[in-house]
Every structure is written in C-alpha cells, then in structure tokens.
Image (tube, rainbow, N blue to C red; front, side):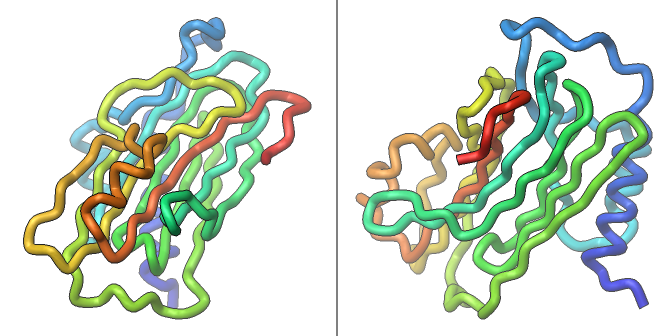
Length: 204
C-alpha cells in the first residue's frame, strides 16, 4: 500500500506537470525571482484528492547558470538559527516550481520540484517526536515576489509554537532579524529557506 505522504507527492507531481510546458526563455539576472505560484482550478482540485494539508507552491525563474537549490529547515536556539534538516537538489534549467508541505515542521516536511515535465521529491521526518503537542501553531508563508540572488537564503515559511492564547505572526523576512521572535517567549520557532546556486557554487 502506498503511504499517504507518497501518494500525495505523486498527485502533486501530476498537478505541477500541468503547467510545465511552454515556458519562456530564461530571464536576465535582474529579472530572477521567486514568488507564490498561481494555480489553476484543475491543479487545486488534484491537490485536494487525498486530503491532508495543501502544500505551498512557489514559482522560480533564473538565468541559465542555475544548477541547484538547497532547502533547509531551521530551529531558533538562543537567538540564532540552527539547521535541523535539509536537502540539496540538482536543477536542470532556470525555471520551475517548488512545492512545500509543512503541516508540523518539528516532525515532517516534504519538498517537490517541477521543471517542464520532470519532477523530483524529497522529505524529512524527525528521528524522534518533538514535545510541542497541545501548543498553538502559527505559520507565515512567502506571500509576494522576491529577488532570486545566487547564494542567498530566501525564507519560504516560519512556524511558531506557543502556549500563548494569541501569537503574533511575522512576515517571513523577519527570518533575518531572529531577535524579533525572542521578545515573545514562544516555545519554538522553525523556518524553511531555499538557497539557489549557480554552476560551480557550493552549498554552505
């Protein structure tokens, strides 16, 4: 039997392929970007077939030097981000889509990549269950177009776990000012970033 995570990934790959053809030529460096994808009704319907949380999908556009993307999950510890997990994915061409499913970042995340008719999939599951059950959870996602600069982290999502009745939600760009989260005394703050790499550039 195919598990729910894998089945959802296969359906997601099919949905992403619907928009994979007829892409324009790669842009110049000044036009490189990452932004939330605009899904058709047909794509949205496919994503809902197996239930569960609906993934966040982003469109990226870069020049012909694009070679890979590194996606990492972070946990805020003593005012600084510490990497918890990550993966390095080779890309073929300058345009495509990323899908990110992160219902609970302390336990599991899934990443899908689509370029033309080609798709790939990776996931991470925590080796042991975190102790955040019963806490409120607030997730902020990248909601607008941002420049894609080689070698620089782009925050895709920030997820806060808190015992407080109300949790202040930040824009994902607050990832670069982690001290902002510390003032509220939340139990845990996680983030996911993407770092696009050009030919010959190594992931840090």
